[in-house]
Image (cartoon, rainbow, N blue to C red; front, side, top):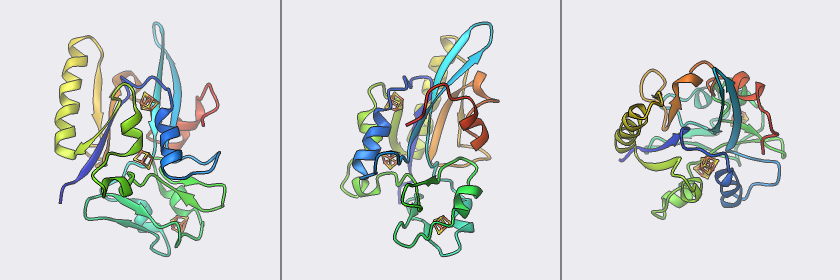
Length: 205
Ligand code: SF4
Ligand code: SF4
Ligand code: SF4
């Protein structure tokens, strides 16, 4: 079976949050709940750099949330997606603490929720809602190997234009959500919940 993946190209993201809104609408989330957050960041080098980190469950190949859930409410599908069963979930939040990527979100109803890769849309041959609405192709959906090649092409193009970037999600940390990240972000980006939340300069959705 094909392994689905998503490429998130931070070099293109303009922080419009169309993806966040589309995710909420498509998945029937209540106001204040969100499975996909777009974090604004600023970094001062010899000049001020502003960029945005779309952040959601990364659908790890070896997901810690599946291992720690005491009642088996999270499963890995044959297609590689990590799926959370909201009906089974008892809201203990063990998975929230265990996830290194901030992928499990605490919801207003006391349970947790996470990106499903819009699996209901995939079953109908459609793309995830967040990908469809992104106006700058910062989110691309497809087969993992195809997206790794696409990320490589984008990386070569960006580097040739003087923007140093790297790909995350293909080596030690195998995930279905691949990131194309700016190298200057290497010590600041969404690898820990601490770094995700510490430097927001606007209120996240
Ligand atoms: S829709 Fe695209 S450009 Fe807008 S915030 Fe989301 S990833 Fe970034
Ligand atoms: S919050 Fe729900 S999904 Fe997470 S570990 Fe507890 S029961 Fe499992
Ligand atoms: S793939 Fe679907 S569920 Fe996941 S962040 Fe995008 S819109 Fe939300």
